[in-house]
Amino acid sequence: MKMDDLPPRPSPFLLEVHARLASRYMAPHVRLAGFQSRWIAFRRDELEQGIERAVLDTTPGQLTSARKADLMAQAREAAGPGSVLFIAEMAIMRSRDEEAEGEEAVTSRIMSVALRETGQFWGVVGFVELDHEGRPTGRVGGPMPLMIEGPPSD
Image (spheres, helix red, strand yellow):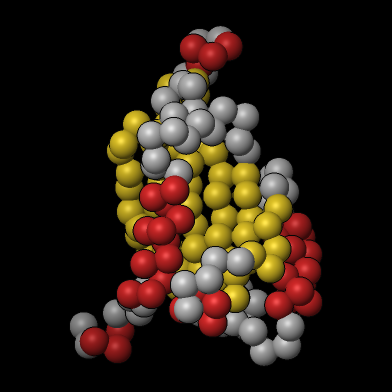
């Protein structure tokens, strides 16, 4: 296998921004009970300057392809022409024991943290494990490379 055959690796900057976002959700005071999802768009040039100002920050509920496309259009309009965006998606995932009922049916909870840059085929995804009260347990996974669906032009 040649070097050109290997998938590209996420940039160090993408990994750095992912680590910053994930660390916020791992802090001891964090409680994510009731949290469902969050979709945030940042301008890359501002992130490079250490400015974390969202051009769009929403809690969209379930993210369908159509909803993601709508959010992307809104973010592009808010960011202005030619802006490169970093898109962060956070969502709570639950594993369930089909034989149990109520809260006892939930066997584990994680908060996924996915980050990508517009115009790129690759992003990263990781997770923060949560206890039954929505507190981080300290266990994290990733970030791992994430291939983005669709063309890199978004």
